[in-house]
Image (cartoon, rainbow, N blue to C red):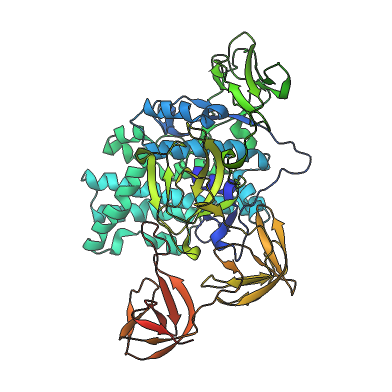
Amino acid sequence: MTRVISKLMTAGLTVILLTGLAAPALAQADTTTDTVTTTKQAKGESAIKISAVETPYAYFSTTSGIKRLSTLTGWPESLTVDQLKDDDYMQKLQASHPENDADTMDSIRQQMLLMAENLPNFNLQKSYIANMLDEAGIESSDTTADSSANNMVISIYMTLWEAMMSVAHSAGIMDQAAMSQYYQNTVIPDLKQLNAPDAVITLYDPTDFSDEFFQKLITSVFDPAYKNLTTNFSALADLSPEEFLKINLAESVNEQKKLMLTPLIDFTTKLPDGSYKLKGIVLSEFTFISTGLPAEVTPTPTPTPTPAKAQPVTVRYVDEQGKTLAPDQLLTGELGASYHSDALDIPNYTLTKTPANATGTFTSDAQTVTYVYAKPALQTGSAAATVDPVAPKGTVIYATKKIGLYRTATFSKKQVKRWYAKKSRTNRPMFVVTGYAKSKNGVKRYHVKDVNHHSKTAGKTGYVTTKRAYTAPVYYAKKHAKITVINPAGVNGYAKQNLTQKRAHYRQGQVLKVKRIVRHNLTTRFVLTNGRYVTANKQLVQAGKVQMPKQIKTKHAINRYTTANLTRKNRHIAKHTTLKVTGWAYSNANNFNKRDTLRYHVAGGYITANKHLVRVVK
């Protein structure tokens, strides 16, 4: 459930019942929705604190019993939130198990942190599905919850079937005819039982595929499904083809569906200090893979043993005279478990001494960790440092120059996960700030998640600079007298601050007068002089009046194209032709490996804006 539930917590969900997929709605879609939505606890219920998270696993059932399949090899069964936040600890853990993919480990680490932080915000007495429906504004009755769960497990069913067919083909057990027979006898009845739409049922039916298309299906769909499944659960790769083909698709998704309909509180275990441990089953996309479990039997989760008693660790923050500068913090955990304490940023003081026992393990004796601070000498003139303002956690930022996404907060070429090219305003890469960290030299970094949903980079996590010369908030913070719509698709005006009840559409290039700016959750809205609300997203609107050409004349013969990437030529335009410009866009909108180039939108398509080829008339 990890992909959908993490999206649920970071962005809010829209339930698409035709496909059963859950899609996040972030800043790029701000003409119709908000950036971050949080479902609160039901009235009268108190939030819980998640202090530990089990590493992801799934249940694998055979006739000999139920086993746990771990996603990562060699990781502890659970990690504390403090450990997950400790870059040094996590780097050592990852280095000690190089057999795990580095990007996968980093992604799972961030998912565990997001779950720990955001799960308590939901109604834990309701199931994951019910929370998702509530988030989408749909009444979560038993009928709608069951139907939505059906829709969601359909895609899981298809993935398991694709992996099975990959194994059957590579082992020479099934040819196309045999797969077609299996599909007719097993898959179609199962999908109908799940009330799958006819379009889904016929999508991968191999019966009428040509030989060429069937081979492409094997290499581009079936084989990647198997690779993904065995990458996440390496133990499945050890199964023989015959054993793998015994996977019971219907039982697997029925058990998964039951977990989706289970109250979220059942996925937590209360610890002696009053906080909770989150079960790793909720972090796995595949929560149940069955080869021998009888129908209607729900597995009993592995009981958490009662830990031995451990004494707490008291963390103190004092000046050089022993005066308390900040309230003490009390760390608790299981006997033998690791603890990690943090220094605080205390105004007008600098840390002078980091204690040797800043990290350690809980013992049967009480321990004290003391951080010592002193007032620094006053700096003036050029010696005073200028600190860039930092965007709040949960808000969206974008890159204004070429930047790197790094694996750690200490930047180096070896730690670069990928580069993002400098892009024009409407195409700048966006990130949600999910946390903060500091480099070895104390330089603050954002921990972010890539939210460019139409790009191949979507979902990547890592660290980026906090310098305002490179990254900036996507939303305006101050009122401007006028704004210009720059989004090629325009923006909508709404009656409500949450951008509902559409009242108008404003085209690209239209200048709007602003009365004031208001905040909505972690975003802002401009209120126009006519009382309507529009987005304050800098990728969609720009402060002031933006001047763009209204008419151009060709200096040379050029072509007109269907897309802003100048592909699919649809007309040849002669030299000295005058054209009316109706808008503009930039190439490579979702490709962050390349910079982008301005194009003019004219009747029928797009043309170059190269000054050597066209001349602005007015």
